[in-house]
Image (cartoon, rainbow, N blue to C red; front, side):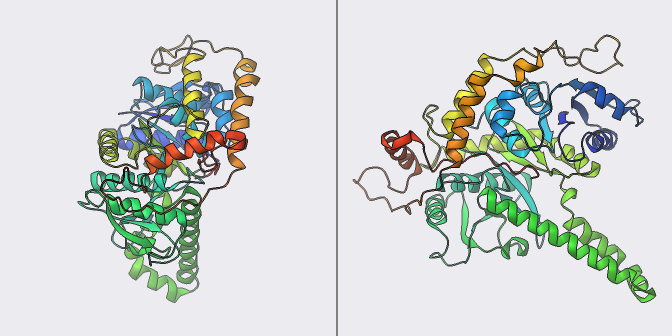
Length: 463
């Protein structure tokens, strides 16, 4: 299994990414390709004994920082470690891509380079959260700050298929995160999404609304929400877990009685600590893109990078997940429209993908070939175009920057709840496919021609 690792991504990179790669290669036998600035990575590798380990370097001269805009990072830094790593997955030179860097930039690049799965409107981060019994899958955990009912319904499909295939749950329980269990609670957004999921009861075991406290109680196997809410919930749980473990250390270390008590419960406390440790999971898959992408926490230590590489190693299983997601979405009307044009966010990425392919600065070849004077096993990229050309293309960056700013200025319009379909009355009014077409027609006639309900990529740099 060949894993492309964004060695320059993360708050503690490249030190911890290189160390995590060494651990993964040693413990799992994974072939890890460190994508990043060659000179920097060679210095970091020199501090480790990598004799006989399947690790090599793929040079990427540009670095996407945590403060970079997702859209501009894709257009302005085509030689970044994120861009080149995902290109390797697309060409089949790597089976999976792992990054602890700017999650918004990773999502934008994955959409532009790998593309979405058929019928998928927006990818989502599916993050495990500790719960009674095992863990709950929280989706979306930070990729989409603003969503539509269509997106929540699709997130439910993605999470359900993932739990069924990866965790072996025959019929995963799916709930929408809300401020109460009653169907009258929530917002227009959640009520419209709930109506869609009730129509898909054959494939989705929708159990209704769940509250924040139910995430850790294990009431649902999949909890669906927007990326903003999901990320806040996830970070809150991580913070409380650290608070709890810190207090336990103080209690058991305060005096000799506490230390004696610790000896009696040490094994049980170790199991609790392991379940509450977010770094034990390593990373979360970006579901909905046509390839395997794992997003790790921005502050991941070496152990988390190691575990993220382990998660990326199950590439064959994740591809089965992708296939089934597209198959199920094909049965229902809340599958995304196949239109690639338009003035919305989806149209932006379609045009971005077209431009990237048309203006690719070079076809990356010979990654496995050793460059002159380099240690065996490190790949060398062809000569890149001048840095100022890669960074400054005003016509390209300005167009997408303007579109991004326009989309940020728009809020989410309330969505009408799905009405039941009556025979002979035409397409169901609750269908988001019909909603998409109507919305597009209304948008074209509206001043500014901007689709206010379109979601934009998350700029949470530390998801």
